[in-house]
Length: 320
Image 1 (spheres, one colour):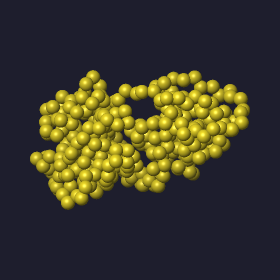
Image 2 (tube, one colour):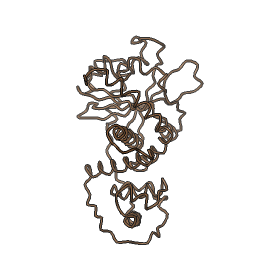
Image 3 (cartoon, one colour):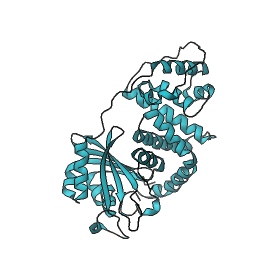
């Protein structure tokens, strides 16, 4: 089998689409759960995407069945997030906890301060308070005893405090430079803004690497297709309006399209950039993610319109 060719991809893509469709009914719940764990919609969406990919892989290589997909993907999310937090912020976690009564004050009023808790404590609080899991169910997800789940919950309430400040993934100056180059169709400037092996990602459609790839076949060309009539391949391009906004601790790019006959301005995409030494190292296009777009739009008081595959983004965008 030629792994570099298209045969394998063409066999896998219909299965992936079916998997995405089958999990769509509870994806909003996964996003809300991820938001409670991570504290911002960008990390929440990334966590959901990573967990869906891991669950899809489980279906392919594991002899066991996924009897309850919702519960299984929730477990994947919790464990994956805890593992990542331990790598980034190592914390000592002990399991020899004494049993205590589960007589706790209401923690919902402290939800905005959860992000100072060590990963497992935060997971317990979110599973209990946000998703309504029992201590027994939480214990099964985290591989601990129900008694320990109760104790972690109790101690977490005592540790809640103000969340620490996190640095943005890209400076406003870097983001604005990218937008200015984009709006003037300045490909030479875009080459200077992007690092050579820049990654552009548009889940669940795909991703690609390399500045020249994205200019010739990938995300940059695909976005220009909808923005600049001179790059039109087929169909009618919709000129883009880009707006830089500081929100959720990041400088993000809001994307609006000038659609003929549209009654009002609607948010259709959000782009998040990651910066390395003054250049853009990664572009995440939050395009086909209705829960995320709704969250951002509601926060900013905007109308939104989630894009669909039929909007033509598979034409010339490198992800088709």
